[in-house]
Image 1: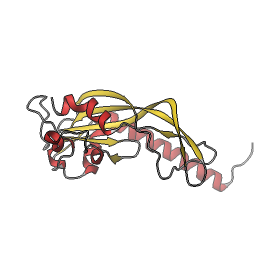
Image 2: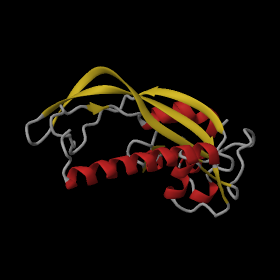
Image 3: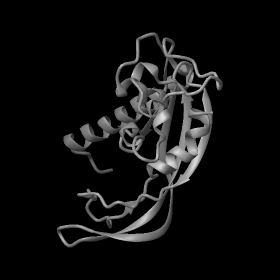
Image 4: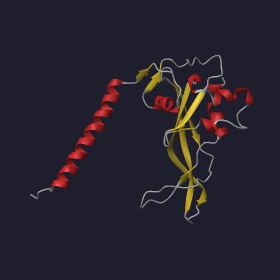
Length: 197
């Protein structure tokens, strides 16, 4: 049997420890369930946690009646807020505050995630001369109540916004691919019954 070097042994121990920690963390979350938090909601960092495992007992309730129901939408792949995109000519002025509300007023969080790839719909060319195909991103948006983390609805959207990014980071050995994302109008059309209804 071949002896392992000290560095190899340390690396193997680190990998095993990391795997045990990760598995234990997942098991703990499954046992523990969702986390109730009684802090006032003031930040995007708080609201995006509704997509993970946290709810805020001080948040206004979503009743399904007495619209509008203010919403914040987050791209889970990038962990970035999308609410700055939920303004503009596609959102009626009368309800625009529900689509870009103060964080403390948010009743619903939309957790947007690309779940599948669709057909090739274009090409992006970058300053470096590299070309990347644009494929339809198939997105799933899970709507959750901020106060309880209860899932209100799930909608699927085939992204139509195929705007090329300024830069595209690619792992070594991988081919660059750009995915379309939902446009403001697509988010509005898919979610308005929950926000304005």
